[in-house]
Length: 342
Ligand code: PMV
Image (cartoon, rainbow, N blue to C red; front, side, top):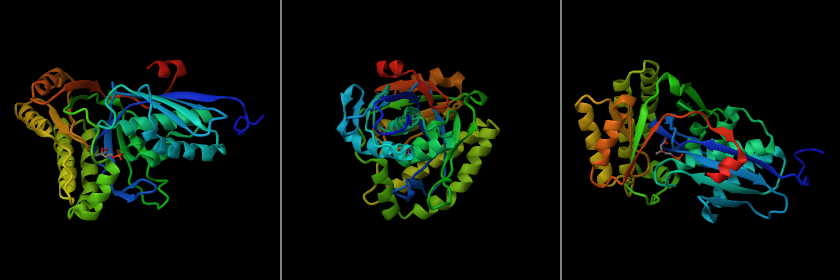
């Protein structure tokens, strides 16, 4: 029997774990919206303690995919998850629908890159369940099509996602540039709101591209920022990485703030945390901040400073919680029972 044939009564199931990643050199803007191709390359670190665990179970007889997120059936997530599984189904020549059971151990949709870990885990589990055995580069391309920054969560450590030149996007793929163990930095995530963000990244990027007067300058200056960050990482030069990362973060937010109407992802506590991190660095603590399309602040620091940085952020008014994490490894397959028990 052909193991991929549609009428097989076999249930195909697999589970995977992926961690969110945080861009130090930011992705903002799409050169192709349908294929999720970025206008710029980007560079990130993958986290350790935060994760998404996802089981994908293809079952004959289902008329549509089903998704349970954090213990609840969540039809809102269905359209994107189905579109993502369709990419895998078309590779496998299969139309069987699936039950997706996914858990995040951190807030979903609040600027903590849950879509990055979520779609990286979904693609990896789906690939294994269907027996496609795609390469990590192919998995990265597929994850990118589901959610841009998910391309980077296929890999651990320091990761660069290339803009690519090809119209079909096959060269817009992430690759690891340095392993976690080679430079194990720490991250303190200051959570300042548990609310889901009002304006998602796709809408924000499109509005920015259409209305921000700084869009071209953003595109024109990204290559130099990537080269500077790469050089800082290769040299394990913390101060150099701090300066270029804060620059890229603030430049992305300046670009988005200048859209019409302006995109303001920060709250008062986010700004207070930015000042606190800068104060600490001025006092000699090796720490810098970065912020994505949400109000949480991520403070990246040398491991020896992690406890002090987390303690300082916990004291900032409006900070609800601080999650401390190191840098993590590649997305990985896991035991099905363990993923569902998560
Ligand atoms: O991949 P998306 O659509 O969630 O966009 C991510 C955008 C930023 O987080 C703000 C920047 C980045 O490079 O991750």
